[in-house]
Image 1: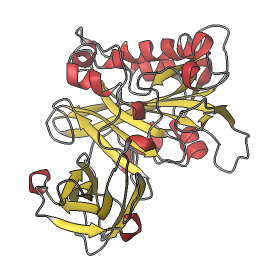
Image 2: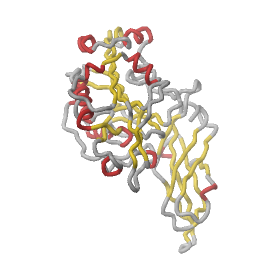
Image 3: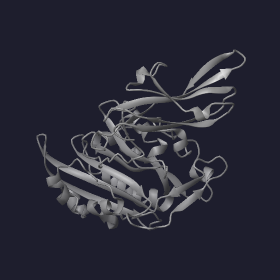
Image 4: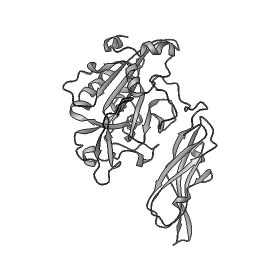
Length: 368
């Protein structure tokens, strides 16, 4: 994706006739996708094929603009001697700004978005990319089948309520083939030697209890990663998530959280463990993160002006821990940035950022 172009990818299956046309329809509003918007074609799909992949390059797009698109195929039905169009789900993307990075909200929890992400998006409690009650933002990697960071605000209201879900779902904004197939199956069902891993939330469902749609969105496949359950996800990691929720007691108390997996430290050459898929698993092999991290920000304000800030980070080797002492894993946000290459809390005023991100003391952060 760039300020003037993008590459669209899709697939189709189950065709019984001849594919006469295939490609994408796109426009700057979802409502305009009615069969009369702009079309681009992929001639490689034409012929007597039951399934295939569709790809097309878009050019001459407007910078910092959201586009909506859907894949289509035109199939010739010999019985009726007519052409039948089939359309996929509506997706969206946002072109980068003239400086190379997408136009992004100024939310305090957001890391810097550079335009090199495979997919950057966000959700609201009202669904999709529209609304006023923001849920979380994410940077999704097609290579790792995981969000490399998920960022969200947290206040007392978010954790108060009974909203809950018991099943996972595909993210509707990303092709299902690019998501791990754990929607109706556990890791142990789909992968060999994976019974000890759980589908670990990045934005926790326990931090989105007040709104059923926001809670539902935490169960998207793009919000999970494989985490060791008994002595990691269910112990020290869970203890940290509870401690973060303990920082906010009312709607007026707000902290800003970014969390993510890491497979390598910047400049590192760590080996990565892959889970081997059983028949039908997507992907056929799935990488297990070597590390997990979390960064948290507090600010003080005078009216609308931020006057002071303090942050804290936590970095974990992805392993079994004896005990729940997450404080032993506290580091500065500066250190996390060094290891991940991300610019965290990029919308915090620069005059406050360097001091806030140097802190590595959990007690100082709690009392701020």
